[in-house]
Every structure is written in structure tokens, then in C-alpha cells.
Image (cartoon, rainbow, N blue to C red; front, side, top):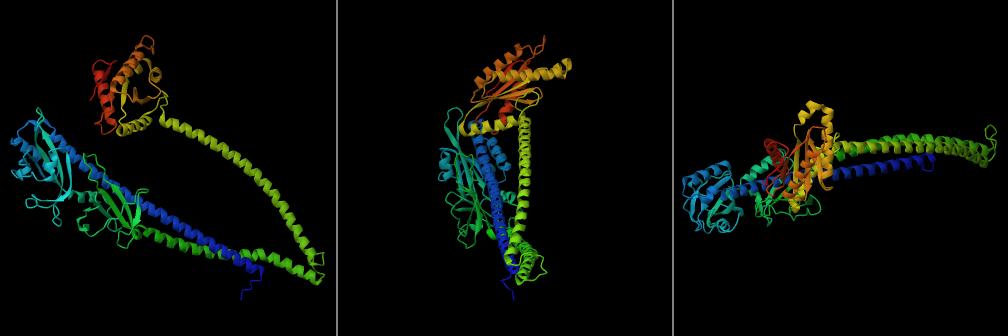
Length: 557
């Protein structure tokens, strides 16, 4: 039986208990952190998939609406008689270009289908259809609905589901009189949603229990068809984070993410992409990890128990020996090496030993503190050197080594920022793209060192002429570019001409004129990317060179 009055056994029980508690705490903590991280990682994956599906749906809606608008506003549709066979051919071509167009046609203002792709429903009365009524007044985008007139005339892409369509409609006006000529409309087969899912979902989505739903603004399921009336969507709880856990009224916890479909169409359908995955499936790897952690914790605890037993023996044996000698002294034995005959003297001897040990430890502590002070100083010096090196690296990453101007990477970052501000707040900006005329001739005639001098001089002149809020960068080789925030095209032209004159009149090389050609452009509301303004500036620069160089060329388109 274990005698707990023994110092050795008490020490063993204490160390073993501490080892068990520490191992248990570490195991639980690691398991908790792993579970939280895996949950967040799984949720992030689901959210990225949902965003990808949402973006694809939004882009498709936007493209279809833009296609309808371009057709309705083309002179061909605005001026040509709808009964002209060329209209029929054009509609056939458009319908064939997108396999999910189920129907495409034009109805006159009275609601009669005048012409349609493949002649389908030609002559039919559609005056009561919502798309026609709305299409007389504006660009219309209709939500998912089942087929009415086309149900018996078309073969369903998916025979297991009823045909459902999305409507696109837009009015057509006469080019001269601006009178309403009719309504151009298209019905897109909703089965394209299945194709979007197949391209966006990972191959093992079904194995992992991942399910995707598309819902309208009333939280009614549009996809998949088999879930309509069978699955009840939960309340969206993603306001503060990208995911939430809900039982979906099914008694099983699901990891859920809800992403809105935000398109650039005239009308918003209020769609949402909801993805769910059973928590048990999402955290399957965590369960396996937790078992491994528990096993490792058990092995570590057993190992610590063995070490504890050995340590308890090692720590207790000298004290037990001292106690035995103290007992011998107390009993009056003469062969004990202690001089004192009472236990008090033995305690004093132990005290002197501890004092000696303390003195030694204090000496070592001072030595350690001195070593730590020296080490901290070295760390501070290394940290300062590292900060200086990082600053130099940052400068190399964003500035051109020859001219000291911003480099192309820094320009791309700032351009992206200005374009984002333009899209959000309609703040205009302009671009000057310039090229040193006949720079190769300078290098060939005077050498590359003089060429570098020319680039540095042009860079200095540019920096001196622009405002402090403007952004000047070396675009590459002998090309420079200037971003002018909150500047219209007229203002940019004035500055470009001022820069051109300044460089032309500057004696950069004695008895040799250095000139620049400048292309000017401004960002336009129709620009889809920031690079379109640069492309126009580059085209204008090319025109300036064609017209003889040393000039400024701009265009509004």
C-alpha cells in the first residue's frame, strides 16, 4: 500500500498530478484551436466557392442584358423593317451564339410577335406577358418562371425538370423619330445554372456533403429543383462574418455561407447563393486529429510519469539520507560525521549548504543578467539593421533606380486605387504617356551614359512641372507616365503641352535638342478596366509619333 506520509511518494503524487493536468489542458487547447481553425478554413472554402458562383451568375446576367441593349440600340434594329429577312437572320445568329437562349424575338407595340429566331411564336399575341408590358417602358429582367407558350414547342435540356426561363426585354426606338418600334426580348433557359454549378464546385463536393442553393429575394429556392418545397432556408446570419452554423430545421448542424448575387444589370433580382456542409463532414479531419492528439498526450503523460518517478527518487534520496544521519545524530551514534549531537545542528548544516548554494545561484544570476543585457543590445542592433534593410528593399520595390521616380509596380498600385475611386465616387483622372524622341539615336551618338543623363534630366523636369498630388513614374525604357487625379482631359492637355515645351527648351545636351511625344487620355465611364485609359494614351502617343513627334495628341474616346 502506498504510504502518503513519505516525502518521496508525496513528491511523486504531486508531479504526476501536475503532469496529467498539464497534458490534459494542452490536449484540450490544441483540440479546440484545431477545431476552430478547421471550421474557419472550411467556411472560407465554402465562401470562396459561393462567391465564385455568385460572380459567374452576375456576369452571365450582365452579359445577356448588355447583348440585348447593344442589339436594341444598333442602327440595324432601329432603322430596318422588322419583316426584313436580314432581321430574321440576325436573330438566328444571336440565338445560336448562346445555347441557353430558348427564344429570341421582337414584338410590335400592340404585342404581336413580328419576327423571332427560327420563326418560333411568330404572330403570337404576347401583350399580356410581364416581359412585354415592362419592356415597353424600360430594360427589364424577369425572375425565374416556368414556360407558358414555349413549353410544348421546345425540348427541355434537362428532361427531369420542367422548363424554366429568365426573361430579358428592352424597348426599340426609331433612330430618327425616337418613337417606340417594338420590344426585343429573349428567354434564357434556367438550366444554365446547372452548368455554372458543375464548373464551380470541386469534384469531391458530393462526397464532402457540400450542397448549393440559389434563392430569390423572397428566400424561395430556384436551384436545385428537387429541393423546392423540400428544404427550408435558414435566416441569413452572415452580417458580422462570412459563415454561420444552423440546423436548417433538419436537426443536423450545417456550416453555412450566404453570398448575394450582385450584377451590373438595370434591375436587381435579389438572388442569393447559399452553400451548406454538415459540420460533421467539415470537421472530419479535426476528429482524426483530436484522436491523434489524445494518443500523443497519453504517451507523453506516461513518459512524464516515468520521468517524475525517477526525479522523485533523485530529489528525495539525499533528503532521506540527511534525515537518517540526523536521526543517527539524534540517537547519539558516534560514527556519524556530523559534529553536532542534536537535530538542530544538522538543520544548521543544511542551512549553511543552502546558503552556499544560494550564493552560487546569485552569482550565476548576475552573470546571466549581464549576458542578457549584451544579448538585448545585439538584438536591438540587428533589429535596427533589419529595419534599414527593409526600408531599402521597399524603396527598390517601388522606385526606379536610375531616375528616382516611381516604378511601374508602384504606378499599377496607384492606378488601381484611382480607378476604384472613379468607379465608386466618379472622381475623374487623366494620364500622360510620353516617350523621349529618337532616344536610341542619343545612345548611339553619345553613349549610354549620356542616355542615362537624358532620362534623369527628363525625370527631374517632370517632377518639377507636376503638382504634388500628381504621380510620376518611369513606365519602361525611355517612356514616362503621369497620373493626374481629379483632372479632366482639357486640364491634362494644358499640362502636357507645358511639359513638352519645357523639355524642348531645356538644354539637356549642348547643341542637341531633346524632345518628347505625349499621348493624353482620361478615364471614361464605359471603361471596364483601368488599362483601357492607358491603351488610349498609348494609341495617342503612337499618333504623335506618326505626326512627326515633339507634339501632344489626345482623344475623348
